[in-house]
Image (tube, rainbow, N blue to C red; front, side, top):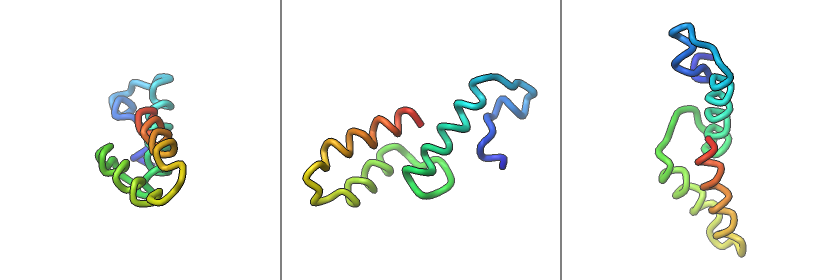
Length: 71
């Protein structure tokens, strides 16, 4: 699927970083449940609403933020 390939791949440059790019795309899809590249704040806001009322909301939101940085 084209969305999982790093832009460099289309210029004939294949490297370890290409796999890392694909992993980042997959992480963002897991976090959002959607294909595409939403803004980080949109993802955090969506998770804030999902976790509202949870006794560990702050800890879980920090984990979401870490996953966003990795992605």
